[in-house]
Picture 1: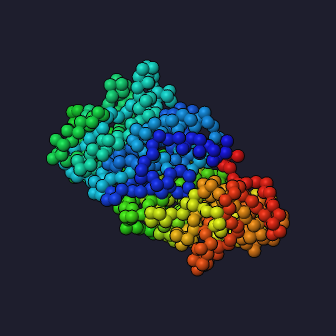
Picture 2: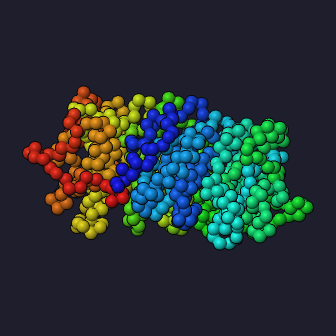
Picture 3: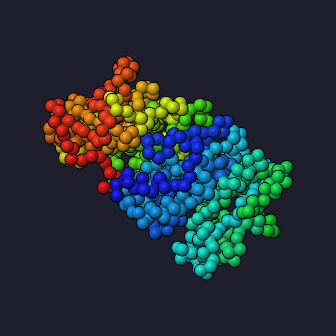
Length: 317
Length: 317
């Protein structure tokens, strides 16, 4: 199979066909029509074999995840996703790998009505770089820099499941088959909180998606907003599957592990009623408060300070 | 050095600061303001170590080239470049490598007033995926599909220098130091024909950039436009440096090798005067004519058919 046949066979089979795509795959560049009066949000995430995923990962889940992590970034800005490009390096043009990879990717793309409009492919070590585009009305984007002292700090969904699944796969912890099934789904097929991010426009002051761990990512909000925070360990939402394993793993698994792709956002007290009205399926949990004093203070149920050992993920560590 | 320090140190040092970048590097996504009434052109190209460049390549030239190949795609659409994202996988966060890489990239970026607005970095085998954005008024984009029977076929600059440099480096041909200096510059630091592409708006019927070789890339125009062509071997522009080596390399080097990044475009006879008025520094050469009959016919000076052995580059061959 030549590169061009490969592209034609797999990447043009998507179900999504948006009217704002004037020219998609097949020319030197895609031609797109951004909506008037909105800003264009653009993000890009790399997934590299052996760094971000295990080399024998199921291609279906990898296709899902590669797009999901980008949609998650768009969600964290309160953006409506629209288009994406795929850069795929793979050892050989293997149809048995590409078919499920594309199925996983396009299934999620269809769910969010995002269209693949371009990209590039090459022989090489397995790696994926997706770039996603979305829209947000000017002034409505959720920024990392908008947190204010007094804001509540919130988390969508629960944290720690993805990390628990990874530890189990690496042999560090034993889970029942049922438990592993639940948490592996969270690791392999994270749900980008796109609807939640869009719903938070005009309600949240700041937001970020948790890809490197709560401490690292909340840390970005604090730094960019020039504020501090206090969070309560026992308020951090943990799933019924992961909670029984906390004694074994410690809270660091929840605080400092990536791959959850939930949103962390801050919202002022005055918006609390509006926030509660949103009531998304994944839920919001209030875990602490933004304070004027710099630094992140973690306390337990009794108000006693908690000192984490790790603070986040460093891709060059 | 952590990933975040690395990003901060190298990728935020650019000279370009565009007013249409509402938020650049440093949030979950960049926020950009596309101009009203224009289409957004988006393209992406991968460069993988050992596939697209030799592992010991000079990082300065690699930084230039990684951006140049994307600007070349935008040029082929008649687009004005504006923004780009960089996805960089590298074995280690090495400042001695990153400094010249960024210098090469940002020097070209400054020349075309394009701003780095985001991307991602990871540890992994050396590879670069850049994604570039530009603008073009609706209806003015140069498409692969626009060629019409009777159009002249034109090439900017000259073809074959980059391929000659690569053959010399791989030991297949001997060049003098002076010759190698001239052609290596063409291989390592191709000039994206951005001004030429924009000048061809309203004049050319179709265009493509020559990244996989004239035969392959002109082939895309013919296929997308559902036409054929005849080209004259002796009309193909070859530099004074490469011409003396043609007897040794054969015409295939000129016809079927990538990396020249010149534009191939078609333009009707009625626009010939307008085209000649443009007279860009790199020059245009008319190499043939679009015909209604499908297929590409290559003839020599005497009108005798020429049959190339190779037809283009296949990244999975």
